[in-house]
Length: 511
Image (tube, rainbow, N blue to C red; front, side):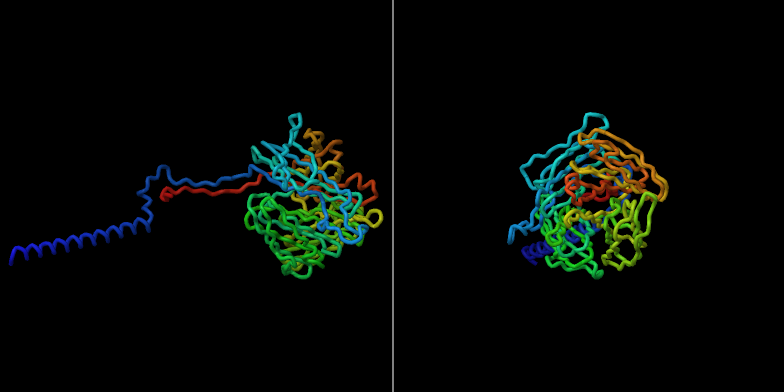
């Protein structure tokens, strides 16, 4: 064999050997990468300096934002036909009061629809017990009430409210509402959608992102959701408002239960309700979202001689009893059966003497509201929509200027209880204090001025969470005109809004 042939064979063998080694190396590398990617290291190989930490942490809100609606208005303000028969807002006016209590760093109010407006800060009184208070109006539109906290604890928070009234035009009467905290989901109980009634749902978006809001509505005809004639979705622009007339979209119902769900960001909503009987105004009011359903609901701020209708709805079939609340306890008014999902209305007639509210007891959780109405001169009347109260360790109401307030305090604890009521004036100074003692199931009423001649903000300390309370409003100019004028304000809880966050570190996971 020649040297050239031996060299060729030697070269071929060397090349084959190199190729074989490369293939084996590649296979080994791929196998190792697969192991590292697919399997976690054995925990014994991890340097565990002290072990994996785990814990539960309570976090609380440090900011409270509330939406306060603008003054009452006609939904359709266009003019048609003879001026004698055109709708008119008359001399409608408004007032508002904002209060920040407890451990507050800063609190301010800003017009929602005016991006160039400056925030107006709440100011403290000049003594150690003072709170921060601001008085104003909402004639130019809704406001945003923003409060920053230094601590989240009982007795700390913010309460705002607005009132609107007129003595001539088609909005004669009194309407009022507490300011609303924006949320992703909320629900409403609404009265009958009869002819002449407008129920304008106003949805406001205080955020920087537009959102779509889905509405679901149940009525009194059956337990199935209603398909609205206007559609079941509202688009709300950033820093904007959208509205729909629910009475027109779901007409002919004895009452409505409405849920709202926002896709992108929390929204705030209220319903502006007006009623007309031909050319006679039949009242105005704001309706705010209901709280969680309950099998034992107490609705304050109903009085003797009110014509009262109660609307109730449960998710499942149930029996229900409706009673009058008095200073001595309760007196049965009506009872009946609830069909699952269906809104049921109980016409209780005229409230008897000594009535302070309505109690609803059921063997299932229900949502409820009371519609109370009174008549005035020349065929005019006014109404208010009152919702169940919620007991809290501390709560407050800011009473709008130029109105008169009457308190209802009801014991829902099942045993004798005692609470302390504090009053502050429009400058935030502490002007009165009273202890209220109540037997099981009893209630009491007193004027706001009974706590202090200049009382403008009321705060209740109730550590055992034993009472629900509310404020019934009237307005001197409306009363002196011979007109009916009634409204009510719900309380705002001054308690921490907390969530529990679970956390566990794992040193075997590296991100």
